[in-house]
Image 1 (cartoon, rainbow, N blue to C red):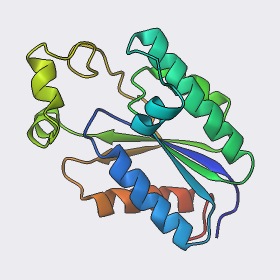
Image 2 (cartoon, rainbow, N blue to C red; image 1 turned 180 degrees about the vertical axis):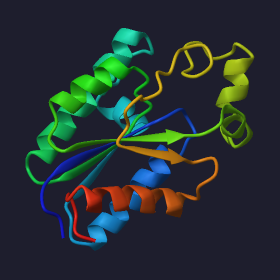
Image 3 (cartoon, rainbow, N blue to C red; image 1 turned 30 degrees about the horizontal axis):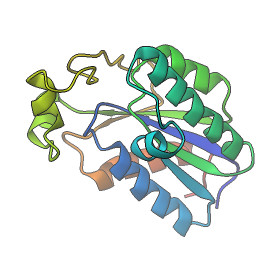
Image 4 (cartoon, helix red, strand yellow; image 1 turned 60 degrees about the vertical axis):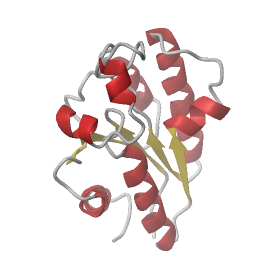
Length: 177
């Protein structure tokens, strides 16, 4: 049972497990009776942020849009789970400041493991210079300094990572486990 709405913001590099964990967590929350929406960065770029590029300004606009939707949902009793790279600390702080019950989850993973498990070959292309402005290669990723939850998706299974987030939400009083 859910006490109130919240925004669970998963941030991390491409391939770090954000979407997998978001979807597993959403399923578990729904099973407990929660109203849940997942805002996946790739889906949002296709539907809500079509036409934006990958400049810092466009990335910030995209994250602010996701944050705005999360804010609407969370203040209306929905748990919004955002799974977006969101590379810049300042815009993540902005979203936290304007969003009800914001929980930042950093999906950390060693770079070598991200490259090794990259099924789409994006890191290989970015490292070869074929993809410009690729976060973590040719564009910066500002690691969260004060994430509420840190997951090491290189060593934890998706189930263990989901449990880590779940336990935090229970300890914070956002859910009853």
